Image 1 (spheres, rainbow, N blue to C red):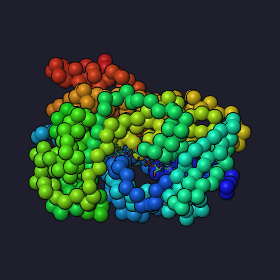
Image 2: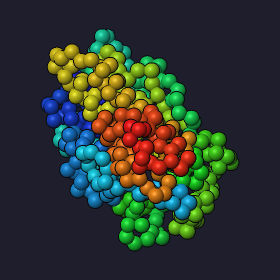
Image 3: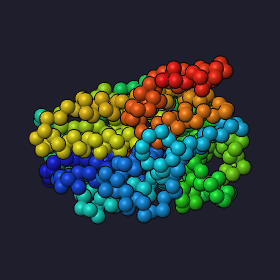
Length: 421
Ligand code: FAD
């Protein structure tokens, strides 16, 4: 059997694997990426948040991505009935990027992978990891190519960025159920033939149809728009009860007063995909000689578009720590990887939970708006969830609940808000 040897093997060429590879290539590491599919490939996760721009920049990918004319995303709009809440990332608390992109992931991931290949990174597409064995931190990974030929890759470290493939969680039995209530989604793309002129046409929006039911509308610069319905699993199962996902998504569009005219009857560019109970978690995020990044470790919920951001944050961090370890440093993976990532995951977990309890929706849709609250929530929505100067990060556990309670009970926020901090 053919055997090769590298410093670091990366499984998966999604955003997590690509930023890890980009960083390591710049350090001069001997790396290899194995990717199961043939690119371009379809994957969900089309609304980015500004924090990812830091990661693309550090991984040397930003320049080429910026040349592609992807649709710029300067903020996000949340709609509930007649009330509209627009978050403008330039109005957020603290430092950080003011914009990002909304993107068809097939094209976006292809650009990242091609940029890496052009820089000399070895990516094997249509190559699937099937087994792994460890001896201390050294590992031997078995892969199968599209002709069915097996080979082995020896590595000093493995970064598992296999996303929904969850390669190491499966092979090493690290899966654990998510603490979030089960939610599911159905999504597809359409030719946006009724797209209005100007900002209305390109505005990314989340239309809240019920406390736990929302529709996403993500316009791309190629004229197509992504449409998706998210709800508790029982609701989605009922919507798609006869297995007809196109009919289910059409029904969902009918529920949206705001979008029904623009999208009713539109043909889907591919059969809508039903993603069931998508939240996932793991018992540990690292072990001797490996780290789990992106969706291979934890995935919460799409409502605040945090998935790719966690994928790139963890991908680049794992790459940095692995490279230092290979170069002889003692790394405290618990503190520097798990605990660091967990802090951000905990913040977003609170926001997701409080979205579905309705408390966060009270903050979003209460009128008049409180601009102090808004700029701090906006920084969280931009992905700056490690900035503990932001009380909406530091005290995430109680600040949303407290403010929602005050608003619902008509207490004057301007007098009391400091106390909730
Ligand atoms: P992926 O992008 O999944 O890439 C992993 C790669 O690994 C794939 O290319 C796969 O082919 C490869 N692979 C898998 N198995 C193997 C194997 N055995 N061997 C080799 N390679 C393998 N996130 C956002 O940021 N914004 C959103 O708007 C958003 N919307 C979402 C909507 C829904 C309904 C859901 C469920 C998720 C959404 N997400 C969103 C989350 C987003 O899809 C993921 O967080 C993101 O794609 C994770 O990136 P990744 O690099 O970890 O994995």
